[in-house]
Image (cartoon, rainbow, N blue to C red; front, side, top):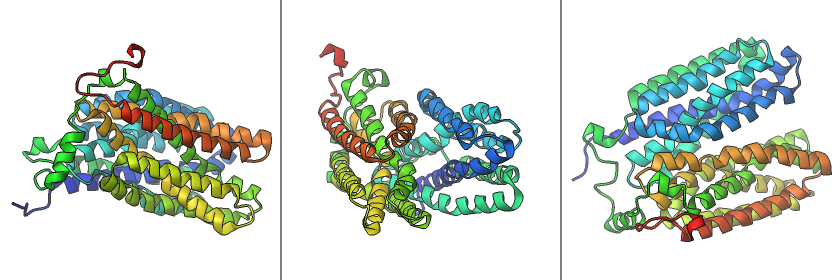
Length: 421
């Protein structure tokens, strides 16, 4: 019998879209807009100020496992509010700072809150509330993050230019905090069972899909067992490798300039990457639901190999450079979709939140290591040839990790550590 009223899962999805839209697309994606005006006002270099981004990534790596445990143990509304206080009010507090060390100190609570409401909240709640089409739902959520960013970035730039960077911190931060707090309180709920419901789609999934889910998710592995398995480290390394390729987006403008393209051209290329990311979020989610996460992983690796090859030979053809940027953006959008789904298929529901939090460490680890590494390589070589070759290597590594990790997935009989095999 079909449900007559709208399932509460859609309200939960709306809540996560608003929270990640403002906290991720709003706060995180507008942070770089403040670098130039703040550094000029304080009399410090942009590089000196941007160190706080590195501090943020380091704190996220250390904090993500604890954030996963909080979401597993406590009511999601309480944890989401805590995340909003830590991240968004730290963002607001940047507007009061007069010394660069203020950004360094506030980067700590900022990263702790961002880990909760940007990195973990959405995938965890979607896993709890949706029993089918998880890939599509994750893709829709990620697409909205890009849409919110596209709206809030020019709005923030307008505020900085018209009212100054301090007022921009207060206005954008204040607006984001109100929206996130209201969304958490009004739209989020812990689990369907708490409202005497079942997950959306669980009662009307086709028989073959239900059987596939039962087969795929029959294994229920504890966090302690999972993190002692070879498959966990291979999955984590896959996340590092694929994210390490994705972060090349930060270098597209510099690479385009090196090839001789104008600032306007490189801006168009970066826009192509953003459009590819928004479209790719939904496409990859649909494909993942249709053919499975393993084949989707192989598909995005092949696409990125094509994109990197395009970057290599696009010096005399801007259309090829823009197309390569589009495909690269499409592939980079897969990171936040495949991570949650692969974790579920590797280890099941038992300790999903805690295990996924640790798998998520791969993304900030890649950012810490590879964004500056690409920059140093460019500084030394004055070209990106070695970077592009390294990206080919990372893609091969990603393919090997996911292939071997898939075969070493834990079985119901137990999962001995790699040192025991």
